[in-house]
Length: 132
Ligand code: FES
Image (tube, rainbow, N blue to C red):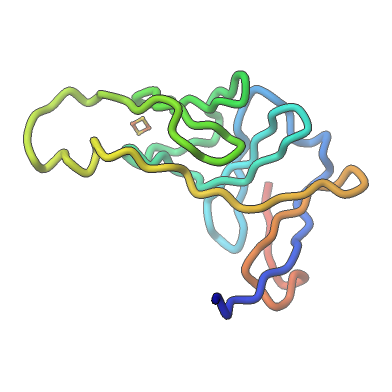
């Protein structure tokens, strides 16, 4: 059982999050993205799990985010890998870590009365710094 407390932290109005493109989100200095697919809002890690390319600005279509560097694809609803890039096409055991498929970390969100919240590890939601 985890002993880390979590609290709902207000992020932004729902209509601030448009479909089609991941937006940059910073919480307490941590680079994340916020993305929308219909009524589903996702907060996810801000770097691709393939080779750590920033995901802010990445294209989203049919709930699938495509990394702008090597085009790995992730389902924004749960961070799962839809398609893993075969790039860069280099040989060698040192690239084994690049070949292993890794999901994007996601954070639980909710929308309440037109406002987006994220469940964040904190004792004091008012002390959390959010930049969008
Ligand atoms: S860094 Fe994202 S697919 Fe390679």
